[in-house]
Length: 429
Image (cartoon, rainbow, N blue to C red; front, top):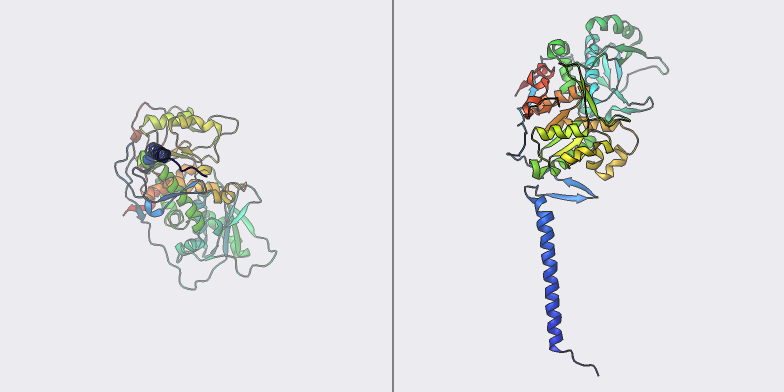
């Protein structure tokens, strides 16, 4: 016969259960207080973690004022103010076709397009939608894999005709290739391109560059207007899927920097040199000495001018390299693209062994960050600057061997002197 459980035993079990539940509640509250609540203070209302990556809603990011640090408020965005373009008559006869491949990365593409537009316009020719070449000879992409073809065609409506392929091109007919200088002139067009176009009806352009200093408005502003302005600020938009990828990475970077700087983040253009611990080098115009900036120097620079330790820093370096580690001593939230790209898209954009997509991702991330730090004075810096000038994001910093702790003393000469060609194309709204 079974014995009836005692009342005392029942009470002890109840008390033990209550104590156990209390301990779990206390422990859970401690975790929430120490690890969860700090993340939720001033955070977006809507967010989730998916496949190990942060996914932030477009509508959850609201610009906050009063973020701590040497952040500069954005200037007013600017609008196109170039002269009215000559409009083609409807059904105007074409005098042949101008084709080209875009090369060397996104920072060069607008200039290549500008030359092509000027040539096609001068000769009354039709522009063939470009293809895009990679670093390797075998790498070639159709225009629509990177850029929006519809936006490109629409932006040139009334300026030059754009077609996908030349009409009535004879199979096997050899197309003459002409090397075009970085700043093509009407004299060059008349002497080197027009005779070939009249005879062959098609010319393919290839660009050659002698320097990357193409930014002074007084030198080339009038030369490029209005066609260069159309190419720079009106024709090249990322195709929708690639644009959404970049936008999602921007949202992730803002999320990671939400508490420390109200969602503001910094991009730094650096590339680790093979077999070296230094990153990017630049020459001092005054002393003619070359200064190289490694992770330690970049961290010291950003800390010196007042950026908080929790600020998110994005590096254009392809993937994390051990020489970058000292930067995390100053700014633990330092990332390369492999850390902020959605996992399900890495195979397509990072792990395929094709580095062309990375150039576009870096270029557009550097356009949209709150601060852009250029450690090398090159074409990438020049063209990121022009797009930031257009959008009003003019906090572009150049590290230098100065004692000043004011971020304003390190602003790019493009901003301080307004010597960038963008100022000849754009006006305040």
